[in-house]
Amino acid sequence: MHVAHVLSLPSAPDRRPLYLEGRDGKDDRAVVRPDGSLLVPADSSQGFATYFAAFPASYWVRWTGATAVRLELELAGAGTVRVLRSDAAGAAREVGRADAAARTAIEVDVTGGADGGWLWFEVDAQDDVVVHGARWLVDAAPRRDGRVCLAITTVNKPDYCLATLEAIAAAPALREVVETVFVVDQGSDKVADRPGFDRVAAELGPQLTVIDQGNLGGSGGFSRGMLETLDRPGCDAVLLMDDDVAVDPEALLRAVRFHRTVTDPVVVGGHMLDYNEPSVLHAFSEVVDQRHFMWGSPEREHERHDLATGPLRDTPWLHARADGQFNGWWMCLVPVAALRAVGLSMPLFLKWDDAEFCLRAGEAGFPTVSLPGAALWHVAWVDKDDTVEWQALLHTRNRVVSALLHARRPRGGALLRDLLATDLKLLLGMRYYPVDLHVRALREVLAGPGRLHAELGSTVADARAVGAAHPETVKHAPGDAAFDAALARRRPGAASPKPEGKAAQAAFAARSVLRTLRPVPAADRRRPSVALERGQATWWEVPRHGSVLVLAGDETSGTWLRREPATFWRLAAATLVAHLRVAVRWRSLSAAWRRAAPGLSAPETWRRTFEG
Image (cartoon, rainbow, N blue to C red; front, top):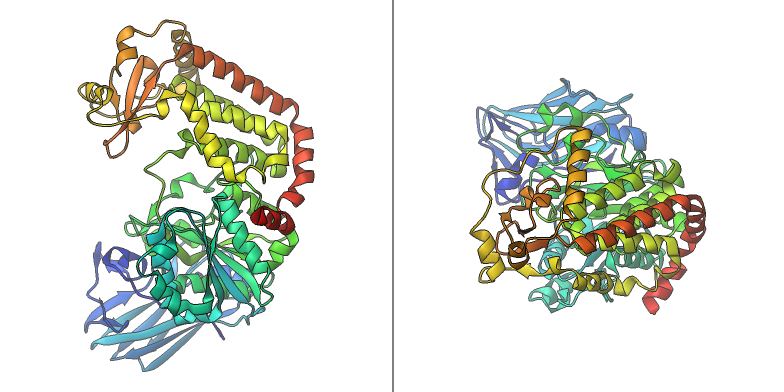
């Protein structure tokens, strides 16, 4: 038997629902003690049917060939331990029981359990029971034993990054399997300059390597970590991590153990939990929908699931094994075998680099497995909309490039239609900057892949420079005449209802387009006519006004959107032409990008980029 999961305990009260069950919405009386043990008081029960404590048996059965799982506990006190097993529909039954003893073991046959199901245990305490440790073991032997490199890409988030390094330094079990921790620092606020860095660097010693390079985006940072891993013969995987995260070292170790044990190498993805709402799970698995060539969960209603209010025991869909197609690079373990087979990231700077790589790896025989219980906390992006900022160029360009490389439907299915509809809504909503960027993105696609590596370092500056021509990029704050005047006419209440049905929406869009032919009232040119919250500033509300101020989430600033008829019609014509050109040339563009892709992602190409 070989260790798969080791029980860890919550480090903060708001993380407790991920480790320990409660009853009736409240935590049990169990107490996490300073020595890392758990006290279950006499005459009480404690369940462990939770995200981090339960064992996702079906994944180990499917990918490692495990047929038996054993729970081993170190206990003190009198009581009973019960093991329960769920099926793919979430129905649970008891499969083992033992009296508490100093060392207690319960073995479960999991043959045929690949479709779904978890294992968990419960402690019924007669007297006080102290759980000193627990671990889940499988009968599948490790098939690879190379060490793993950790690669963290960071840009001006040194405090988060330093906290991650401190957690790694304090985790001896994790450090035993880690060759090197690479910190690829692409910012101006350096991690190495932070108070406390020298101490953690001394603790990690030769296991820490800090690499300073220009901002080449996530694809440049993570590709650097991949390349450095390839240069270390004793390593057989690289574990990629974002900078603005918090980690439980045991959760990282689970990805490594799984990687070592799977029958054939796979990309091992880690789930994302919300840094500010720690029990909220971003997605259980993610795919690229070929109908629209867009990423997301197979079932959108499962996104941002709160494990505190919808725990494992009460959420049937969490029990079916979920097969995804990609995993975000907030936490993702990539085997060296995959890197040697398909290369590194495409030079896309940000957005779609992780999805494109995983699709490419999957086509080469390295599927992605998003492993429950392997996760970290990441600062979520739900309070910002980067689709209307400089990253809008990357959202569109990289989505179209990824479709040219991997779409199975002609012209990416409904991709181009969706993108054109998005541009119309943005234009009606007086968001001219992102449409300008979208047009440039499509022109870059049409121009071909020749400049991707050369222009990585100027991506941000070039995209932001486009904003200089658009007044909407100027932030307005209290004390600013436009901000104060608009705030006095703030619109109360919820967003206006969306027109019902496609016909009503089309009619509204047509009327709004015709409205752009009329002059903008002089008063609306001088100041916004109303202030709207971000949720109110929909494409069916903004066109009703000549100009509006859209407040930021914290209401300390706002964006002044103004109807500009000449800009509207110029960009409308430009985006229509660009979309038509891509549609007409789709097959030849796809062939050109597919021919170029191996060279763009090759380690030798990236090495030249880093050396240049």
